[in-house]
Length: 390
Image 1 (cartoon, helix red, strand yellow):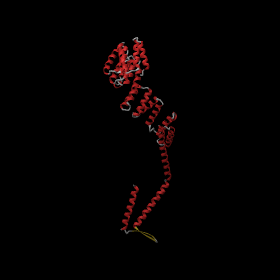
Image 2: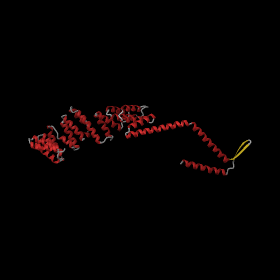
Image 3: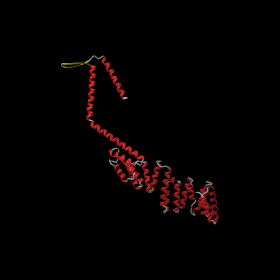
């Protein structure tokens, strides 16, 4: 486009010069005794322009010649920069392809060439870590912090990730807490901190971070339930020798979490093992009112003698809304066995077996018949239990 513009400009100038020259009779006279030169004004203008052009190009050639060493240096500098960028990109590609030795070698070349030195050092550190070279990894991380540490956040995140891969949860937690103390709390670093707290078994922090990430929609519902269940289970298990402390800790759990089936199941088990049967029953009943779960129903059927009557009455009310529910019938049968209501126990257990055959039903009936002194029936159900699935 530019070439076309200049071509049109030259033609326009030539046309304008021809038009002006047609009606112009002026001339230029040069006298240097004994010579006398007379030129038309147009021709003189053309010669003058040509001389100026030649002189301009001559000066430019001299200037370029004098600046040639500088041009050569700049060219070599550009070539080095291009090679360094190519090395950095090659290092990244090699790392993503799993060629870690090549990745570290290219990153070293980029680092020594001065191209994005902190970034090259971080790539080299990751590559060295993948090759299980801890000394080289730490040396590269140290180099990444040189020159004012422009990639402070990236360096700390990288260091934390590498420590987590080494299962150094305490070290990773210290690095991440330092990072959060000096800047914003990003979702990615919160996730890393959650992994560190899980590894360090710091369950209160696991619960807190799970809540923070849940509010930001940064954890899937499955992972939320998994982490909450694990953390609460461990916290309550640690208090199993302190029934009052266990109940107090459970009361501090948010109501929306108390009714999660897996959380309620773990809490009810720990409460029962701590001798808080009433608390266990309350946990199970609230969770079942929110969501019907066979696992919770099955645990509801395991109760001490003093709890049996209340649980039987509650389970029979549930049965009106869940007729033919095999787990509920099995739970009722077990409760009746504990309460020594032999006839009702047999009816419930046989009804459960009729709706859903299974090993657990045969075993419950076999033990019932053993207690009733019916050895033949007990043996038959033991044999069927051994042959049954599930």
